[in-house]
Image 1 (cartoon, one colour):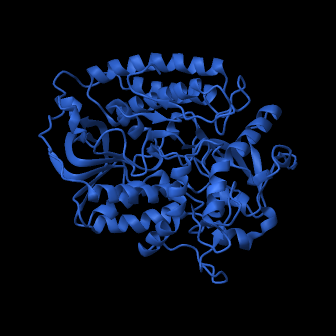
Image 2 (cartoon, rainbow, N blue to C red):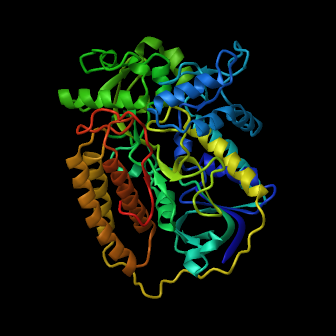
Image 3 (cartoon, rainbow, N blue to C red):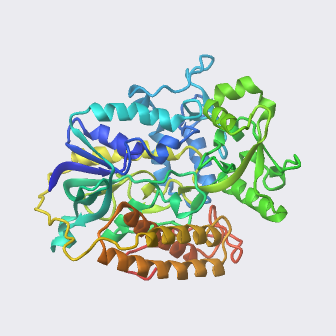
Amino acid sequence: MLSFDVLILGSGLAGQSLALRLADHKRVALVTKNAVGDSASGWAQGGIAAVLDGTDSTDAHIADTLTAGGGLCNREATRFVVEHGRAAIDWLIEEGVPFTRDETSALGYHLTREGGHSQRRVIHVADATGLAVQQALTEKLRRHPNIQLFERHIGVDLITGAKIGQPQLGCLGAYVLDIDGGGVLTFRAAHTALATGGAGKVYVYTTNPDTATGDGIAMAWRAGCRVANMEFVQFHPTCLYHPQAKSFLISEAMRGEGGILRLPDGTRFMPEHDARAELAPRDVVARAIDFEMKKRGLDCVFLDMTHKGATFLVEHFPNIHARCLELGIDISRDQIPVVPAAHYACGGVVTDLRAKSDIDGLYVVGETACTGLHGANRLASNSLLECLVFSEAAARDILAAAPRQMPALPPWDESRVTDADEEIVIAHNWDELRRFMWDYVGIVRTNKRLARAQHRIRLLEREIAEFYANFRISNDLIELRNLVLTAHLIVACAKRRRESRGLHYSLDYPQALARARDTILRPGTRS
């Protein structure tokens, strides 16, 4: 049994910033499936939204967030995050993040604008903000004596007091698999944080890394936590469409800097769908692209930046320019082929303003959580901001918490299982799940499609449960088990929402109801 003060599962911005804020006072274990820094945070291009300029205001950022959120944002949570935005950016600057400078502005940093924002308020590091942030923090993580990194490890399940007959004890740690053959380890910790990111890999086409398999959401649900608003899956409008470009995102900031969406014949189409045209929120743009592709039988549409010139594009979007050039696309001369792809889970595990879940000792931060900030649709570049603000809130609560009595924990028991005989079953089930989720639970939904998906999920759940009960676990089996459960929760929430709002668009219920309500699922109830 490995004992720590705090166990953090996930090493994106939420997990890393939480670890660093705690490490001067607590012994921290940071568990991650691949290398530290290999996360959706590291792939974030656009930047971080915060009120930094004198021409901007807290009320304006809140209003933009509420508008994008389709009337479903929690106002208290939204104000909490926006009001702490400046402090979050100041902390990153102190940690050495080299944000792009602009000596002509009073701030000293360049601010860009993205869809849904009424002001330029997105601070960034060229077009690779997440990578720059991760690199700055990872270097400090590796050097800190109070942080022990467990790379190539994946959480299996949380250990709660209920599992040892003492439910009042809350969360006590987790079972964690050493992916490279070290077996299942027992981690004991007075405080456990889930920061495992989202679940984009539940769909065929996604901008997410392969690690985004809904692990934290599934683990929290099995442990007894509520989840909310899982039907709101954000599809990023512009993922590069190219056979060699796996999950490569074309930043929102490109449209913020004047990018125009066109049909193959050069026709601009966004003004016909929304008065804000290319600067409409992501759900509007993604649905418009989906509509045009289906109406005209297109494989993709095109983002045109050719009017901005090579000098501007290389300066502002060096990574996108270089990657496209590798694929034979010169974005200063050629339009960029793009399609929507699953990008972000606006729902997740229900938490409060301290990042606390329903279970004592368990915190949830980042995309795994449902804080109420994003409502029915996340405003661009609010995600990294949420990671920073709530990791700071969680750290503050953990440091102020009274000591907890920690009992001995039972080791992982695999005495009644054997090695799997045919692991090809896992691969087949993974492919089947992702394809029918894309077909039936995508950008546009119907009752019939959701019912078909639910039926297929139930069949897969039974098959996977049998496999899990009889064979030794592996990384692939854990991820598949979590993906199927996450898909179950997405469909259950979608079936309950009998309206169209934000990212959930139903042909059977095309109008929004007069009152916006969260979709909250509770373990033990029919879902």
